[in-house]
Image (cartoon, rainbow, N blue to C red; front, side):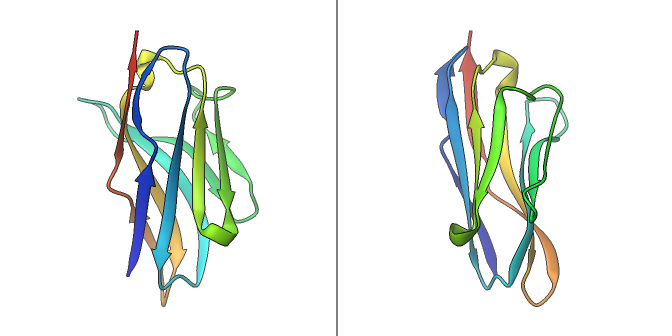
Length: 118
């Protein structure tokens, strides 16, 4: 069984910064990719950023230049550094990972709320 536990959400003023963390635990053989998605009220869940096992990254156009994704393989943890936050960044942020245990599966965290006030 694999668990993803997120932390670091909260309330911040526009222009501020937050750092999200997501730690994977369980019977993990390898982690292929880790990433962050977000879902604002009334909207579909969207990709924010993803990092693969080779440290290649991909970002949504809306966050390029403001958000940085990184990972610590020794800790099975992915981070999302969010700078210059805007009210439109307000959403529940979900950690996502493709992890191989006895099989390869996609896992989700429980979500953490990020609220940016204007």
